[in-house]
Length: 101
Length: 354
Image 1 (spheres, one colour):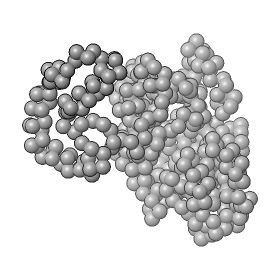
Image 2 (cartoon, rainbow over the protein chains, first blue to last red):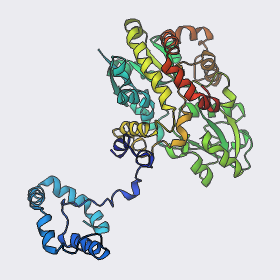
Image 3 (cartoon, each protein chain N blue to C red):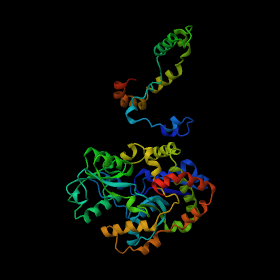
Image 4 (cartoon, rainbow over the protein chains, first blue to last red):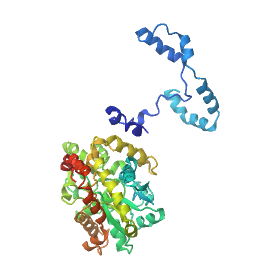
């Protein structure tokens, strides 16, 4: 898939770079439940505010307004009960223990 | 009508040109509907890449499986196969053009081993028993007075004997000799290894067409136009596939795709072909092979006892039927598109051959 989507990229370094090696693949950073934490987002925004690249008028309350995960949470509540996803999580348990959720 | 193209053994790379044509729309451009079929012909052959596996021998399986699985054209059959089939009375396969016209590799041995005779008691890296490399190595050993079954130890497997990977165990001391892709030979020589035989240099000017494109005689008679269109698309691919770096991302994508469902783990999991190997791809720019080159290989096989002595030079005229690809090339070579391709490829031809 990576080879396919690099074929027509307008940027030469995107087209020509080496593909990701096998050794970094199970540490891919995609959340297994499709979600992020509001606290994690807020910490990054605090960094940006402190660095002056984001208005100081942004508050924790904005995060709660902007982050709207109800739909992905609903999807996960449904999916996580299926045998397919239970098997996936069992298969991924060693990966989660080593590298996180 | 759908044209079915499939590989003559389980190696995914052998259908890379057909897959490239399909993905790049080259078959569609010629108005033909092609299905690329992988690993249907003699899939049992992959067992020969296991140390305890049977010897590879596709003779008797290619024609059988072409009929069983409805394969019309195979790009990568061992050149010995159609002649061996013919000698056994199955005079049905015809060589309709070239695929691997060069064997871009050399026999390299560990420091201190300066002749084939000195391989006695040594470890030889070989991808799979009974393949093209095996037949050549066994003959060379016999000529040097060695018994290839008793006097050497064979290290069998992709990592030990594929042209691309064989330098690694050789350099690491896990083997004492192997056939190594030419890109990695200079560094081994610098480290004290020895080059005993260079297949490219020693095959000039005819090349070494050890894998060839075949179709059944009856299919050719019924479908000359279809075959000509197949060759037009294939020759275009032979050109653009050797234009590096332009075609690198697309070639890589096609290779990744054809490896996904291969029945052999080493075919599925290996690293993709690195960019340094691509413009030396062995595809002939005119789609053709040299009958003289074929005959030199057959002579080796006859001498080694793996092809009937009843096969003569005259058989070549019957089995090699390049009229259709020659007709196509005659027409294509006059076009501005192909003239531009050949101009672009001139430095590649000078470095690696046609």
